Image (cartoon, rainbow, N blue to C red; front, side):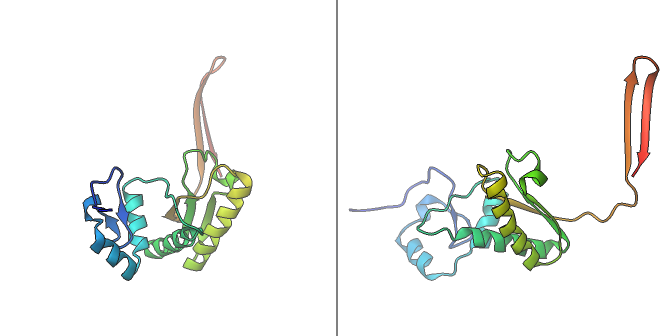
Length: 167
C-alpha cells in the first residue's frame, strides 16, 4: 500500500509543533518526528482554543488528556496572576454555580489544578450530560468599593418609579 498525505478535511493542530499543520505536511518524516520530539500539548490546546474550538475529542485506550487540560489551566492562571476564577464553558450551562462549574478566588497553580479536578467530578454528578471539556481562566476582579442596585419602571397608578439601593 502506498500512502501519501493529502489535504485535511478538518483543521489539524499538531502536538508535535504546537500549531495548525497542513494535511500535506503529515508525511513519514512528520510521524518520525512526532514519535521522537517532546509533546507540545499546551501550545496545541492554546491554538485550538484561540481558533474557537469548543470540544477536544481524545481517541485512545486510556483517558489522559484531562490531566494535561488541568495543567494547562494552571499554567494559564500563573501567567494571569492570582487570584483567578475557573469557569466551565458550554452553551448548555445556564447557571454555572448550580452545575458546579465555577470556582473563585484560586490563589495558586495547585489550587487551580485541584479545582479543575473537583469541578469535573461535581459536574459529572450535577449535570452528567455536560462533560468538562473546556475551561476559562480569568483574573478575579478587585473587591468592589460599593454595590448598588437600581431599577426604573413605570407604575400605572403613580407613573415613573426609580429604585436605588445600597448593598
